[in-house]
Length: 182
Image (tube, one colour):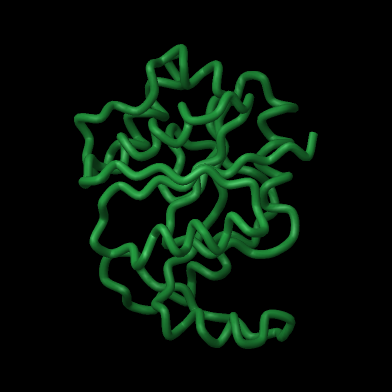
């Protein structure tokens, strides 16, 4: 429908630099709601706050450390949910990079420059991962990766949202499992 509402939740993370200034800068160009928790309550609480701050039919969660490629990523997530009633959560393939890797891409986004992905835990280069996601067919997993995913609000409400006992890690797995049971 083209109706996009953005909710930025500052969960009290010390790693987020000047969240109010960032929100104010983005709010000049985008419809944005800024919410502060005041102290870190965990990823699940931040996600619940963001989803419950709007009545949108589809929620898309995007973590602060994610850079998306231009061209259709949001439309692809929404299309998958709108045309697949049996699917509870839709995510996208992703690659881990270090800031020094990404700076070259940001400096010349239209070039053929390719960054070699890194292992999310060890940060070592893993060139074989670059070809892992070249298949254009969608895959199926029980849960989304926690960086970028979408779901229907009615399903979120039916399962009660994210379990706030999970402060970091496993919250998306628990959510995906709950959605699959729903």
